[in-house]
Image (cartoon, rainbow, N blue to C red; front, side, top):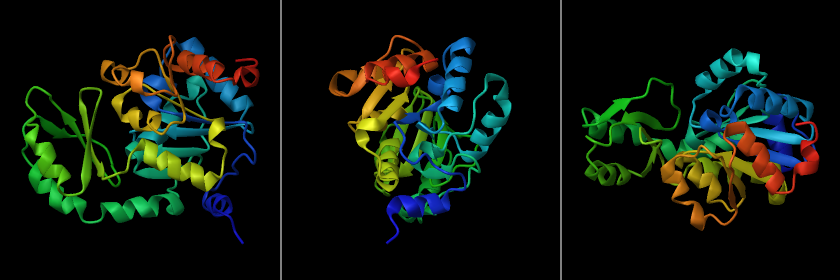
Length: 266
């Protein structure tokens, strides 16, 4: 009988580590892309050297074309493709090498999204304080929002159509299928991977990372986290607040959670 992991591997072009010592799940902007140039190069080189021991997952609000541009443009820093990508704030799962969506993980989210845009777009058209983000979003609607002009009552009208409204970094609004977010998609992916949850560490810096920290998995809130996320820290019992920013904070968090021996040479 084919296992869930075997089915997943069949849909992912590049081989996944068979028995990773660590599954590292990182937000991009402000987290994996944060910190000094020296720390970024140092950490990215470590990820490359430990590709068979560390299963790396991007977990980001970016869409797949944006991730593709990042991997091409950031070559000077040494950032390599991860093994897997959770994009669109949890609405897309793709192979890290090809950036091709993984049907096994995406189809349940697609089913939740069916019919939503047709009902939501008339409510959003001309709404005060909103302007569409220039991206190719899948299974979500993405906007910039101005908190000074935005009408909070609109949230109730939108959520009545089966979506969640996610605000982050005091400037982004994402409309996602109800119950779908970075945390829910990560947990579903980990179930497909059949990995020990004690080997998983997440890292992030804005409110759209809160759902990852709410999973109860080990979490690293990097030192440059936004104020609205820091407010949530006291109730996140498995989340460590790092002093270091970006990559330096990720390393500090990994040491805190007992992965120091794996960090040799970083």
